[in-house]
Length: 318
Length: 255
Ligand SMILES: Nc1ncnc2c1ncn2[C@@H]1O[C@H](COP(=O)(O)OP(=O)(O)OP(=O)(O)O)[C@@H](O)[C@H]1O
Ligand SMILES: [Mg+2]
Image (cartoon, rainbow over all chains, first blue to last red; front, side, top):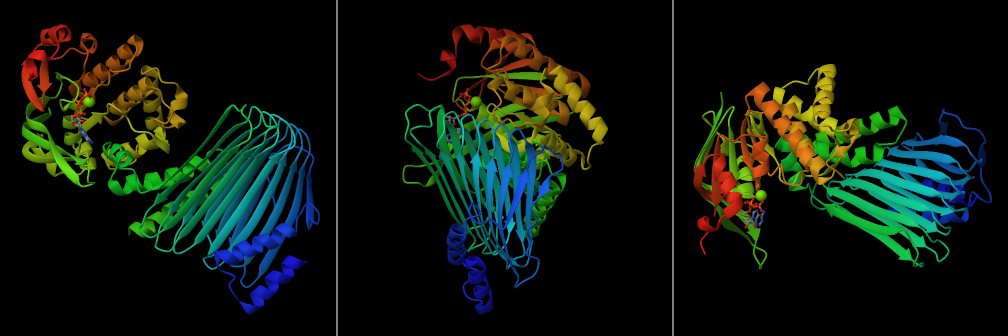
């Protein structure tokens, strides 16, 4: 177990575990330790159920390190919800591979609410079958270093992926998300939408998304967008949406990225209806998360995210 | 009984000069106006004459700076108030271009505004009932309640949504900035009825900015003002509005 060794020794020496570089290095290691070939556990979802599947994976105590390598196979015609909640003070490295059959609907939600000194690195890969829908939602709220990569491709035509995410970075946290969608099949759709809020000097957000449309992927429809609200000076945001189109026959393709402070026109509009400036700002901060939370079925997750966002924003305006 | 009194109002807009500095450009050049409860005042005038600037200045948009003059609502100095305080004292502005706020639902927005205006949260059941019946009378599909504020709304839907807010929030004085522009004939009737209903139930006073006579067939003005180059230059009755539509503003604008 290369990864376990690497991490353990890392934990023992207490070296540069908490830097983005080490997160990156970890991810490199994870990549070689692919769940496709050597999954630690394997989950087969063969029937539709309205009870969500929880792939629990929490390192609650430092200096504990939890490694998670799983292969999740979803059969044809199955609808399922998968929940991943990452909490606690220990570090986590996670690698999950989703293999989705035909005509299936798979909703994944992954929340990262680690303790302030804890690190999380993860890589989710997905292969989406014909006519299937893959909805992947990421909520990253706290942790010293959080990095989550999503790599998706298709195994048949008329399939779609909706990759959504929201993050709140503060107090020198490093939050990094990479999304790669490979359009390798005809008539597939991808909709990538991440919203984030950043505050405090030294906080770092990295968001990189790539949609590659191969020559075979005619009829593709893709949209990639990222929106960041910067609450204080000195927070760093690197937002890079990329589109590479190798076929002339697509339905639509677009990308957008914006990073800025509160929109004066939006604040004025809300305030002109009697809402105070503070409340208007709070509403805008919440709106960045609400846009992503629509469609998240788990009420507990939705309310805990809302609570965290409001609390974090209110603490700062005190 | 409420009264908005505007005297000698001068205001400038902050514009970016070529060198990047913000410079003040005077738009309002001495506006005198009175708006009373229960009455309708139409304002007509050429593009760029400052009608929206007047509306924004009264509502307290940060881009506009008052350089002299007064604006009082029921004896209270509007110009000293923050934007939300102006709303709390009973002023409402239906915007020419309503702003999109993704992630804030129409319902959440209205509930938050209502709570702020009343100082307490509305009874949930009452509020929903009120919202449903107002949406119904404005022929707005129920789905709009859960949609993000103005996001992806058509031009006409945005205008209806402004009137929905007017009806829900029950101000004393409303400024309607070209609420009729972009409305089809049926929507014009529906929106006009909404405004007239608000007048009946809450004795609303209306300052109605428009380019077209046709809305005045549905919302009868007590007075019509002609606005040009940042001030009121003429006034009359509905007949004046009709004549303006034929003759234009030539005689009010310097060649
Ligand atoms: N934010 C701004 N930045 C720059 N110029 C502005 C701004 N707001 C208003 N102006 C200028 O002030 C003048 C008056 O604009 P205003 O929008 O008030 O006109 P209006 O009478 O409402 O016109 P319309 O009938 O076209 O709506 C215009 O010349 C406009 O370009
Ligand atoms: Mg205007």
